[in-house]
Image (cartoon, one colour):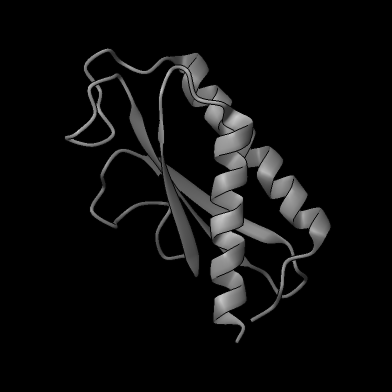
Length: 109
């Protein structure tokens, strides 16, 4: 499997962080819960990514539980996070990109 370039990983992380900011700015409904265990308003975000031959990253995303049938799936790798009104978009994006990068490294072995 092709490895992503550092530039593409940085761009991807910025795009995911912007996506999370947009979701938070649009508002998380008071009755929305990422999981059944959540007590606070939250939403589940799934991001799937595929590394192209040139090392750039193509990705898709979806919110909510779509039973593995949405834009985030069908990619080589994916990560899932819960977003709360008090979440840090930068930290969540970093966690997602690190998870996806780890999966890419494992697939390359």
